[in-house]
Image (cartoon, rainbow, N blue to C red; front, side, top):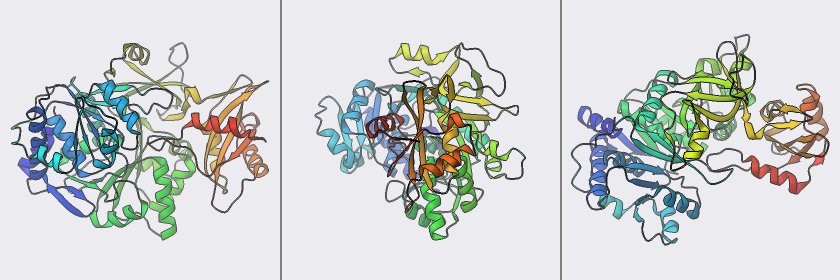
Length: 511
């Protein structure tokens, strides 16, 4: 199924239904949205001579044109290559070269620096007059026929440990993700709206699919990004808003609501994922904003579709095991199977920590032009996630850490997330990330990088005493490093490679 079919269907059934918004302002109804995507498709295939299956990059800050470009690429039977607008032009240039993209649809703010690289063999079509001319082409009558196994989304991983790899996602992969959302996360009706506050090149953009299926509203904030004040003011005016947010975004939004006395009026659902949500943070979020939160766990290789923690479990405080349940990432989505394996590939018993593997129709086709990485990651139909976790008897998945982030001290495995959870229960701690550093006797020792609450100083003795009351002594940090902020990548994830370098340079004090 070509996702552009859903736009065309909505245009036939409810042509006057509102589709695209910039803030409160209506930009296009579904008839206009469909006309734009069909025009983009015709221009790409006609004036620019692109052939079925060729790659078209989208390098834009969040805006309604992003959706016109994305569904236009799919309408034409081409492959979308989303590039995070926060990337450096040279990083974007690598993705363009590696994907062999023929053309880039770009917003001027990021497209102009990209053009300065002199990519003579790659066309750049800027938002504005060039893009308007493209979508004004005589519309391509019907979306190209696309099979379930056809590549339509070539997503590049964040590349924090080396060059990013191109994840090949098919039409079937994305359809499975969308249907998994509708089955497990939240149903979507025509009167609903999705708000694009996170990068549309990532999960937020993929979540447009469910709202396209329903013929619902798509809202881009005027700021083009995540601004808590803007969201708090816009949501009540739009109503029935759903959005995807990284845990760091929720942390900021909740802080704003607490400061202003807001409760999240107008927001129906906030789906969080993309990084670990600590228990203390989600408990605080529910206390301030109520029953609005759903957690998903996924990866670029299985986008947004590994597990789900529904709102009734996120918000439940009556269950005897509510802390463990709320601190987990939930159970397998309807479209996925999960298992835990040891280093030898053997499936581990309930409760044992090992590598998380997932299988199902949302799992990627493989890595773009990288057979070695594909063979290492896809084994007998199972995706090796590189994440460590454990399943309990009810099938709830406790996510620990990336396998490379596990700290081995004196032969014992220490999972940073467990230490972080303990520290976040201290009232002085605003954010924290735990890493290991080399130790001559123990192999590694635990170092906590702490951002304190504004106006409070780092009190190592108090934090050490706090940890001794919550976790085993061997797990507690042996050193603390105070930081004004944690280093994060373009998706809001803490970059632990940078933290390790900071720890090494700073010579953190012994605890």
